Image (cartoon, rainbow, N blue to C red; front, side, top):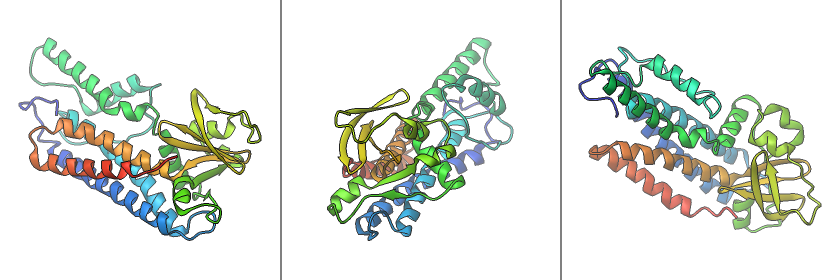
Amino acid sequence: MLLPGYEPRIGTILAKVDYELSLEYQLEKVIWCAEQFRGKLKTDTHVNDLEHDTYFLLDTLVTATATLVEFYYSNVIYSLISTILDEPKKVEFRGLDESNLEQRKKEIFRNFRVGELTQGDEIFKEAHRKKCSEHFDKYLAFIISGRYDVLFEINNHIKHNGRLRGFFLKARSTREEFIKSHFLLFTNESGYLFKNKIIKKLLAADYNSASENISELVIGDMTCSIVKKYGGFTFFSKDNVIYVKSNIGAGLTSNSIVYMSYQLSLEILGHLINAKEGQITTLNKLNQFRRKIECEIESITLV
């Protein structure tokens, strides 16, 4: 917490504690969902996709990870930085990215009285405002960077547009190959459902599956390297995410979803652990989460 101990905080202390406990719960939920999905993936018997109850677990993992980000955002305001509000206000995480960061940050700081002090001279108050601004950027940099945007896109798709579908023939692969290579597939005709971000750009990317010379795929300003081909599908890799592209559609592997959920959780845990110095009970729990995820993430084979 950046707010000095002598500043008023009694009006939001209950909200702060509730947000902290909710975040710990959600971290545990993401870990559980990922573990359950990975276990079910090993026993799934669908011929060329996943059974409904396996997708139930994948849906839950995606939505739980998106909710984790929302809970974390509330913690940034009420716990990691803190506020002198007389009473708590509802926090909504929406539409925050690099293009509007400074404007949104001004609105957030004003609405939630973040970076304000009741005591000290103007030099001290200005130094505190600057410190809060810098930490706000640091705490949210990994989210605003866009590297988890595809998770948020899929979450919105689940909530508003339709169920997930995928593909990979079990009969023509080993169990290990299926687990590693099963992918979600969005058809070219479904492009209208997505905002102009990674999935829409992936669908629109110039690509010819029949080309023998292709070695990379350019998606907007992102260049992905070819990993392998499977029938008419080509697998590309970028930042530990395996994208899939064909003439009929595009997507990403299910294992990439799990990996990103784990990686995002680790980034959140890193900030929480660094900010909880001296809080032994909380640190023990957070470090236990981190060790569990690090163990699980090492066992994921992406390519």
